[in-house]
Image (tube, rainbow, N blue to C red; front, side, top):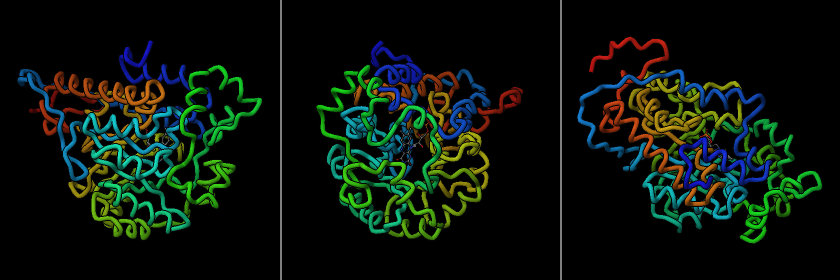
Amino acid sequence: MTYKKARNIADLRVLSKKRLPTPMFHFIDGGADDEVSLRRNISAFDDYILTPDYLTDVANIDTKTSFLGGQSALPLMLSPTGTSRLFHHEKELAVVRAAAKFDIPYALSAMSTSSIEEVGRASNSHKIFQVYIMRDRSLTADWVARSRAAGFKTICLTVDTPMAGNRERDLINGMTIPPRFSPATLLGFALHPHWLANFALHPRFELSNIIHKSDVLGAQGNTSVIDYVNSQFDRSITWEDAAWLAEQWDGPFIIKGLMSAGDARKARDVGATAIMISNHGGRQLDGAPAPIDCVKSIRDAIGDDLELIVDGGVRRGSHMVKALAAGANACAIGRAYLYGLSAGGQAGVEKCLSIFKSELERTMTLLGARTIAEIRPDHLARNGTADGSSDN
Ligand SMILES: Cc1cc2nc3c(=O)[nH]c(=O)nc-3n(C[C@H](O)[C@H](O)[C@H](O)COP(=O)(O)O)c2cc1C
């Protein structure tokens, strides 16, 4: 099967597994510790059911919506993911171009392998730059200035990574960033000649937004990204630092990685316009709740003061509808598009987005919601609690 024939995101995952050397696939696919949060992020969606309204004239479905200060063709954005060059030589440029084609926002990671300027030039669509607050504050301030100059509209601060999570699949598979070709890993790479040729023949791997700080990164990657995170990310940051960042930026400001009503209130108070309810795809604190389970309580606490984006475990259009019915403005995806990227570059990411678009349209049609605004809280119930009392 090629990515063109993929019926769903699970098919793209299978293709990604075939295409990538084992360490790279598991770097995308894996989570922290016992992967409890990773599994729960996806399975929690099964705890909710959707009750349809019928005879509502669903001949025309409109998936357009507004979030982060602009119109989007779908209530969906692409989450920041670092090191894309490991998965496909078209790297982040493939992803931003696919997002532009589908008219949805794309978030570029600070740990990306394409620079802020390259991505800025690649498309005029809604671009978000995701930062960490570094020990060296000048690096964060520099990213903000470069993002503004390169036409990025939104800034996103990830707060769930005071240190790198414990990803044991990476230890088992000898995954390092950048990859090291040792006798132990060589066979795995040799079994994927297509990937190896792409890796060798196209521009080399580099963390493009920090490469100029080679003093902290180590001579062309002698320091691994994990070591880099643990030594350079500032563990002492507080809400005051988030407020400092908000002051630097005069557009939409997202805080990514929050899971509680209390933190959502603090995010509002320091000037955030949106939060991504996220546990980093189960890659950081294992045991953190699933994002879908947090939406309702945060929405109830915060009212309309913040936009809420559900990030983690979204693999189906029906997951998007459940998140919206629970009170989210939009969803975000990470692994789903990386499976597409590794399976087929830009065309693979486009395939991923076309799957979400058609699944969303079908779910809305079957639910009886013609527009995003028509997806209501009473369409959603906890599994086992629906009793037909929904009164449309
Ligand atoms: C390979 C990979 C790299 C990631 N890199 C980053 C990153 O640099 N910054 C960040 O905020 N989140 C990062 N994330 C987390 C994603 O932004 C997102 O929160 C997560 O993938 C959502 O869960 P999902 O994969 O189930 O959709 C990464 C995730 C993956 C899978």
